[in-house]
Each structure stands twice: as C-alpha cells, then as structure tokens.
Amino acid sequence: MRKAFVAGNWKMHGSKASIMTLVSDLNSQIAQVGDVDVAICPPAIYIDFVTRALASDKIAIGAQNMAVEPEQGAFTGEQSAAMLKDFGCNYVVLGHSERRAIYGETDTEVASKVAVALASNVTPILCVGETLEEREGGVMEQVITTQLDAVISKVGIDAFTKIVIAYEPVWAIGTGKTASPAQAQEVHAFIRTKLAGLNADVAEKVIIQYGGSVKPDNAVELFGQPDIDGGLIGGASLNAEDFIAICKAAG
Image (cartoon, rainbow, N blue to C red):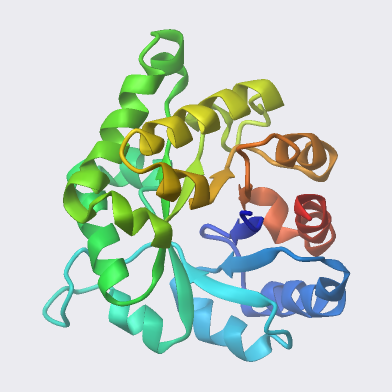
C-alpha cells in the first residue's frame, strides 16, 4: 500500500525571522501528523538554516531545483545534486510549471535532471501538468504523456519506483482555482494507467501527488481519491497550521 506524502514548496518566500517562526511552529505541531511522509522545500540559501532549526526527523528537507550538470564546475549560480545531498536534501522538485514557463526548461532538460538526481540518491519530485489552454484544447493527455515519456526514455520505467510524480494543473497554481476531486482523480488515474502499460507493479507503487491550490478545507476530499497519494503544497505550506492540517488530512 502506498504511503501518503506531502511536500511543502516554499518557492521564493521567507526570511530568517519568518522561517524561524514557521519551523518552530512545525516543530511543535508535527507530532499531530500520523503515518504520512512530510518534506519541506525552502529556497536553496535557507536549506542549512532550516535543517539546523528542525527538531523533528519526521520532516525531510528538499530543494526546489538543481543543476542539470552532474559534476562541480564553472556553472555560476547553480547547485548540484551532490551538493544538495551533502546538505541533507532527500528530495528535489524538478520540472515545476514555473521552471518550465518562466525559465524555459524543456522536457529533455527535466529528464536529464531526474537522471542526475537519481544518480546522487536524491528523490525527484517530477512535476507534470497542463495549462488551461491545453486542457480546453483537449490535449491534456498528450501534454502529460510527452512530459512523462521524456523521463521514461531517459531513465526507464523501473526508475519510477524512486521517483515521486506531482500532477499540477497549471491553471490551478496560485490562482485560487482547484481541480475538483473528480478532475484530479481522472488525471492521476490516467498517469497511473500509462505507467501500468509499461510496468504494472511500478505503477501501483509510484506516489502521485496533487499540486494545485490544496487547502485544509479541500484536502480531505482530494486525498480521499484512490490515485491521489498526497500533495505538493505551495502557499498553504507557508502557514504551519494550514500545512499541518493538510498533512493530517493525508493520513
């Protein structure tokens, strides 16, 4: 049986003062969460600060991005998967819609990053999803298939036992809109079925998070769907009470 997994993506938010308050609140409330894997992904500059402030091993640390280059070198402004691992990161978010849309990351580049992360024993949280235009144009399945196929071609289907997938309908990120539980389940089931066509055992085991404006008031219904295994949480992860409520809902 798959274990629920909730990860908080803080994006480019935080200061030492605000993060200390947030982490202190998480420290005091995390014991309320049941059998759920939990991670938080702060901006890279705060990873060590957060790690030192955490008082519970129930919360893992992840990064929001990493270099496609596998080795150290002359890549100003980048951090490698090995560097993230060196600072205790167990996860890294890859292919987030903001990285794809704002910074032009391609499916091929995302797939290469997934391979590099796996080689460094950092679990990729692979983001896939469609824009509103793509959904309304009837090409949602084609878009997600293309995103997944790039990774499958690079690392193989068996590697997905070590990959978390996060389905993020781009039209529901930071907009206040949320896919209905039925809409979200439909896409999650599509993803699992696609993987099952290559390896049914892998498909049954892979964690597929939902990442589209999850809030405490919709988390229970979303996470109650059979193919939704938790969430990649944006804005709500910046509030300890909300994030803990979402984690409890996943359990």
